[in-house]
Length: 292
Image 1 (cartoon, rainbow, N blue to C red):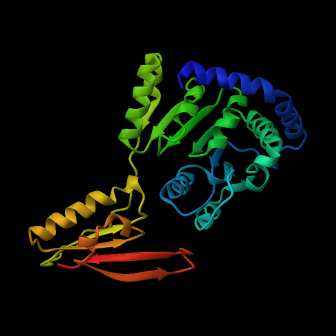
Image 2: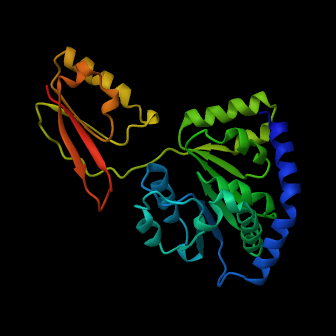
Image 3: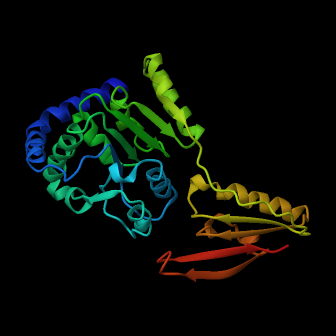
């Protein structure tokens, strides 16, 4: 889909749903929030995952007393909910109301409600962290406002390109995803000023104080799910090369990664089994350890 096609499709959608959105705005103006917020965060849910952890960390960067979190998607496990609850920010979970295709009119109605609340705030800051509903609401937000999109994947780029002129900053956690958008802009002849709104911010972790050790064997540990973007296959290839070269290296994998191991590679590994920690994971996680 081209940029012009995406914009045209969006304009048709906005025209068709405008009566319902208008009703939502009226309801929102009559049922105002109990206090004023300066920051509005659109997040899908609080399921366990890397992008969700990033969303929770972002809340720590603002005055939580003036922040409102809107959840829009029904959760699978909600294991990171406490991270958001402990932030001090207020939370509105609309997932049971708007994440239901059979009652899509409610989804549209709340676009008016939410935009009405945000429009009552002077210069609101609105951030969407991998939330599709974020794009559904921002067309109804008036200026001036700061609208920030956080991207980890390029899943919705065909759709989200319709909002290029609406979004103040588009932030990417990987340079590859940022390059994908830049290529999309070039193909669609997007004006140069919009390229400056594309920003790359790498994910960060706290590095503990370094303690010098004198192990005879290098320890390499992978902890994560077996998704393609985690590049598990590359680490497995390194494992196989290290084994062929008889290097003093010990690999430990924690996660559902067994599908990346060939039958021959598994012969040089020890599968310890599975963790069943319902309090933290609520699922089984196989562990594969390669011993040399």
